[in-house]
Image (tube, rainbow, N blue to C red; front, side):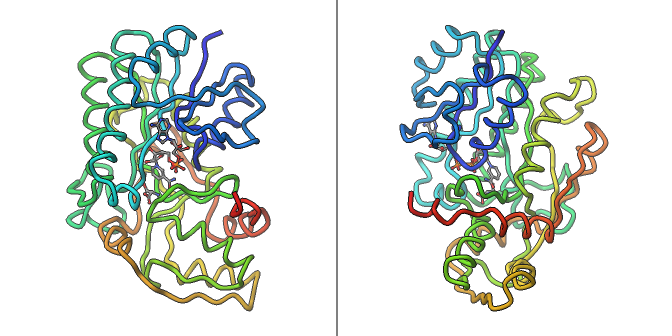
Length: 317
Ligand code: NAD
Ligand code: SER
C-alpha cells in the first residue's frame, strides 16, 4: 500500500492530523516526519522519521524509496516567529514547498496538502466576512510567504496537473500540543493560564476580533478537502474556512462562566499590529459549496472542551 507522510508532524496541527490519518489508513501507512528528535510520545503508535524539509535530496530519496504518494507539508515558521527571522522564514516556508511540488510534477507524488492562512490578507482587505477572492496585500513575511505559496500551488496545478489542496486556516485552538509561535496563540495560552494562575495577560487588546477554529473541525475539514473529488474543487490556491470569530474579551467572558474568579488584563505587544492587519471574520461559502464544509464548534462548545482537556503538564516540556 502507498504511504502518507506528514512533514512537520510534531507541531500543533501535525500531532492531531497524524493520529486521525492513522485511524483512517492504518498506523503503519502514515509516517510522521519532523526535524525534531523529541517527537511527542503520543505519535509512537506508528513510523517516525527525522527529516529536514530543507534537505531536498534526503526528502526526495525518502519519498521515492518509500512509495509515499500523499504529502501533508506542515513545516513552517508561523507569523510571530517569522517576523523575528524573516530571511529564514521565507526560506523554510518556500523551499520545502518547491521540493514537494516538484516531486508531484515528476509524478512521484499523487496528492499534496499544504496549509495557507488568513495571513494572506492585509490591512487593505475587507475585514468582515472577508471574501474568497479579494485584495491580498499582506504586511507580514509569513503572509507574503503564504500568498506566494498559494500562487505557486495554483500554477503547478494549472500547468503541470499537480493535485495540491489548501486551506487558509484561521487561528487554531487545541489541547493535544502547544502552539508554535503564531499571533492567534493567545487563544490557546489563555486556557493554560486560567488553570494555572486563574488569570491571563493577553498580548492582544480586548476588542481584537480574529477568525478561529477548534482543531477537531480543522482536522475534519482538512481530510474532507483531501477526500473531495477533484472535479468539485474550483479553488486551486487555498479555500477560506471559517469556524468562529471572537475577541480576547469575549473568550474571557466565556471562560468566566466556568471559572467565575478568572481575570484578564491586556498588554498588547508587536503581535497586535499583525492581528490588526488580519480579517475579523471570514466568508467561506466557496468551501461550503464546493466540498460541503460546515463547522461544528462555536465559541462556547470550544471553551468547554478546552477547559475539560488542557493538561498543564505540557507546559513543563
Ligand atoms: P507548529 O509550529 O506547531 O509545527 C511546525 C512543525 O514543523 C514543528 O513540529 C517543527 O519542528 C517542524 N519543522 C520546522 N522546521 C522544519 C524542517 N526544516 N523540517 C521538518 N520539520 C520542521 O505549526 P502548526 O501550528 O502545526 O502549523 C502547521 C502549518 O499550518 C504551518 O504551515 C502553518 O503556517 C499553518 N497554519 C497554522 C495555523 C495555526 O493556527 N496553528 C493557522 C494557519 C496556518
Ligand atoms: N495561527 C497562525 C498565526 O497566528 C495563523 O496562520 O500565525
